[in-house]
Amino acid sequence: MEDRFGRTIDYLRISITDRCNLRCLYCMPPEGIKVKPRAEIMRFEELLRAAGVALQLGINKFRLTGGEPLLRRGVIPFIRALTLLPGVADLSLTTNGMLLSRMNEQLWEAGVRRLNVSLDTLDQVKFRQMTRGGDFCQVWDGIMGALETGFQPVKLNVVALNHFNDEEWARFARLTYDYPFQVRFIEIMPVGTSWQQAGRYFASSTQVCQRIEQALGVLNPAEAVTGNGPASSFQLPGAKGAIGFIDSVSSHFCSRCNRLRLTADGKLRPCLHDQREVELLQAIRSGASDAELQDLFRAALLLKPVDYGEATGAPADGRGMCQIGG
Ligand code: SAM
Ligand code: SF4
Image (cartoon, rainbow, N blue to C red):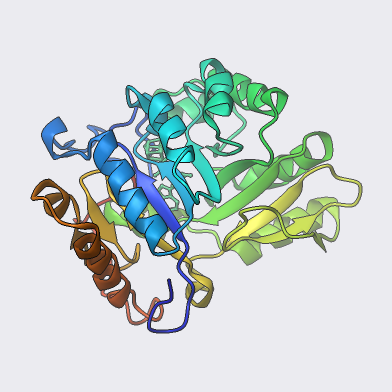
């Protein structure tokens, strides 16, 4: 599917829940967000219907996210059913890793081959602080289990935060000497509840890259990593893994944007930085045909702004990442 600016859109990020077992400082307020009643969340058969329509339009890559996707009961049979839809080219999942150690094998058997695990610090105390209660060791066990299970690549998503994890950027990079991770440093985005933190902690990819190079020497461009999307990829000499930078704020990759998002409550969201959405779930529930649902995908595509400048913005009181599906 091509949008009006000639970008090929072949990737759908599906948020399967707005619930989460963590409360990361930059993603949620301390009390958490007001989750939607279950009846307003897409049922698995509705998600499969939406994915089927996306496939008809040539969108054949899917990422499951949330909230925390592994929290949703029935996620494994759902994934199995999703991978069996004809035409699915790629299925990956983004998780905070808290439930990973006990779910790695099941995820593999269900058909997932690529995992992104979010990890912003390697320090147990800071991890608890950042996630407001998470257990670093539990997540690390899950990550090690993912490598043993054979996921390839295992990506570590690190939101780069000045005054919080800046002392650890080189340490994260060093992990790639020993493990085949793709460590990806992400610029914090001013979305929903994270407006304030985005101002206080923002670190640009250039800043992170310079800090790593000062500590470890020059980063060489690496070969493309599967499903790398907007991240540019580098490697330390002799490293098993790679290092990526997602500079979504300092140098927008809008011209390379290939995605739509589907929120847990069934809205197609064309752009993170634009709060306009297209209602899909109500249409499914009121018996819309595949052709009508295809039109809603097309309508969402029409709303996709050419770039960050044209986007309407995501206000501080708008939906946060955990609600849109980061
Ligand atoms: N709960 C899962 C997790 O944490 O991986 C999946 C959902 S979470 C919203 C997806 C990703 O969005 C995580 O890697 C998280 O760090 C990132 N994220 C959340 N808020 C963000 C923000 N304001 N700027 C940049 N990344 C953000
Ligand atoms: Fe939950 Fe992920 Fe948001 Fe952290 S980043 S609060 S784990 S949804």
